Image (cartoon, rainbow, N blue to C red; front, side, top):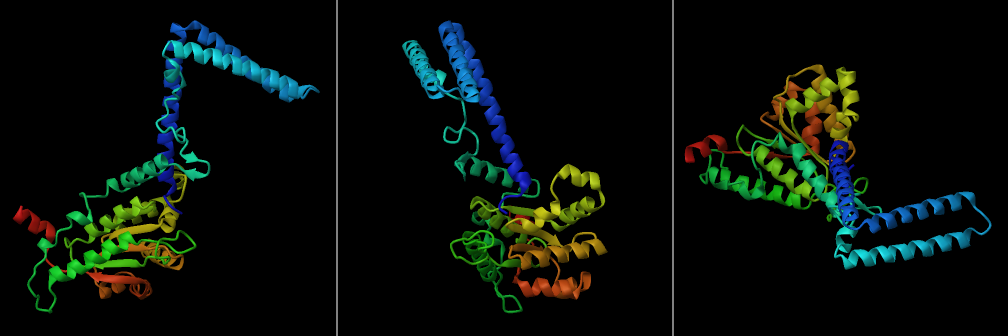
Length: 341
């Protein structure tokens, strides 16, 4: 699927604004040039009339059509040369020819032939980050994920938190770097689909930080990512289901965006208000995306028994059978950062 429709629409709206601005600026500059050189306006009017005569000739399809077209073409070329000579003599040719588009390659259309222009790709990435923006509590990158907050001492269970979390971080860095989808969607360097991940552990251990660090890297590679807390996502789904006018306003089902995006990141599973609808929706998301080969990253404070109890054994089975699980260990980073800060 690539980017969700609303992200495409947002990027396309920026391009539309740029085209409109370019058009307005061109008209302003032309008027200024006409005021300085009235003969340029006269020539442009003559060229416009030749254009109309050409259209009329083609529509009328007279017997001597080729001769008429050639005569009008030569008249047009002569007028254009006369205009350019006048403009060049006045030092205004470059200004006149400037179309004022932000991107000279695609003329702010977003495409060069059938390929997306780099300017459009950049706008899509910016729109995707804005889409994540309100949900991101801070700037979350791999480079500012510090292992210093994790103890280097061996815990009673024999685990050294800093070493374990270093392994988790390294996996996430590799995951983001090698992120790919299967041939049904988009093929990455590895030629294999990236797996779905389950981040488990108490609050404040870095689950959200690493999830969003992955999101940033994957977006920069041109994939479509949706990040949301479970509470917000499921509330929006429920509102969409029971409010027809809301669905009309959104134009495209939010559920389809969730099911079809390249990477879905569902944060804090288990914090949402539980209902039959929520249980069904969570299972549908997990199951559908697994079946269609679309990676998902889920973070939760719940254990396997708690997930089975809160939802269903069937949901827990799909989650633990289809996802690679990581246990986050240590002490609450946010509390430690305040103490150390």
